[in-house]
Length: 146
Image (tube, rainbow, N blue to C red; front, side, top):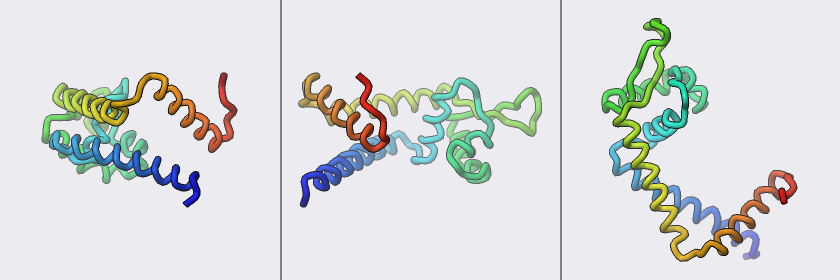
């Protein structure tokens, strides 16, 4: 196998392993993958979105998001509030319990990252980062920023 193809396969495999490890550990927190994605999305927002806003972010219909919202609401991870007193327009807000789960998730991601790079020193990480930036720039056509 050609070195470049071997390298691409190895990179893809490493990323898959990283994602699988994160997903397995996050699943132990008691939420489904789609529920976790929605909580992470809500935690990044400065304003509470509507169900329609969330659906647009994920590229699905509002009805498709409804089940996930209901399960998270029943679990106490999110709450619905009326928008400007209009009960027909709900905003989805993350609760303290939901924020706690997001914080645990960030700890999991950090731990997996630490494990992945456990025997790398700062110089090696800088080299790897510069190589990956070059690869990204080659694919996007951007020139390297110096």
